Length: 69
Image (cartoon, rainbow, N blue to C red; front, side, top):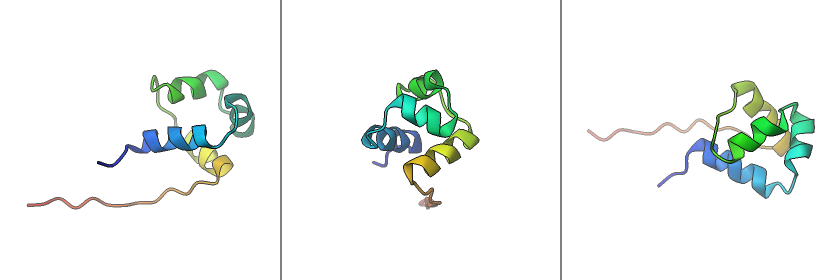
């Protein structure tokens, strides 16, 4: 089963080796907001996700799921 995007992003943040403080400073995302996201307590805005992808050198990909009839 595929992981949700938010799970993949949380894993990328954890795997980056950067502290939440360093990521917050680099992305202008409040450390508390980032912490709530990492613990699954809140989401992030599209702008915040864009900044995280830039700092973590990630690229979003559009993969469409096909429905079976």
